[in-house]
Image (cartoon, rainbow, N blue to C red; front, side):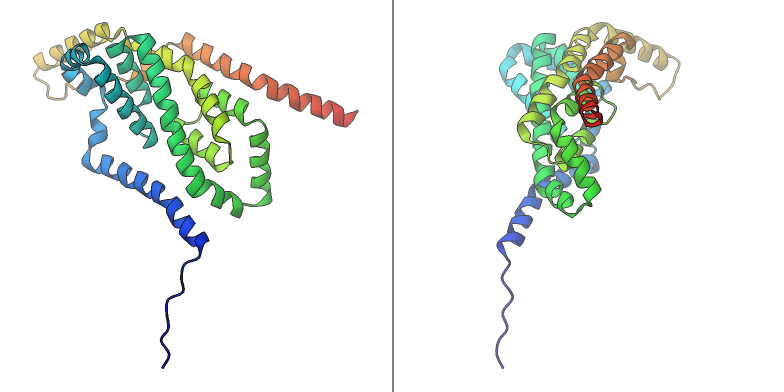
Length: 264
C-alpha cells in the first residue's frame, strides 16, 4: 500500500500565517495585561503614591527615565490601552510641558504606526479583499482624501484613538500619510495635556486634602478619583473642534467643485 504524505503548505498560506503572528502576539499581550491587572497601575492614584520617587529618578537619571517613559507610552498605544491622556499629562509633569509634549506626540505616533501596520497586514488587506463592492468603493474614496480625513479625526477625537487606527488600516491607507496626519493632528492635544500636566502639583495637593478629610471621617473608600481628560477646558476642546472642521474644508470644497463640474 502506497504511503500518503501531507500536502505541503503553499507560499500563500505560509505568508498568511506569518502575517497573523504579530496580531496574535498583541492579543496575547493585551490579555496578559488585563489578566494580571497591570492596566490598573496606569491610574492617577498610583502616580500620586509614587510621584515623589519618580521625580527623584527623573532628577538623577533624566535621559534614562525619558527613554523608559517613551517605551511605556509606545507599548500602551500599541496595545490600545486607554491611557494616552493620562500618560501625556504625566509626561508634562515629570519632564516639563515642551519636552513632555513632543515626547508624548512622537511615542503616540510610533505606537499608532505599530498597531496600524499589524492590523493592515494581518486583517486589513484580507478583509478588504473579501468585502463587497460598496465597502471597497468607500475604501477607495477614503484613500483619495485619507490624509485630511485622518487629520480631522485626530483633531476631533469623535472616535476612540485605537478604532481610528484600525479603520485606517482596514481602508488600506498608506503608512506615510497615516504617520504625518497622526503626528500633526495630535500636536495640539499633546501639548495641551502636557501643559495641563505641568501644573499637577496643585491638583495633587487638592486631591490629597480631600482624601485626608475622607479618611478622617473613618471611611475606607477614599480612593483618589481623577480623570486626565478633565484637564482640558471647554474652551480648549472647542478650539480643537474648530481645527478639525478647518481640516475638512478642503475635502468639502473639492467635492463641491466636482459636483459643479458634473452639472456643468
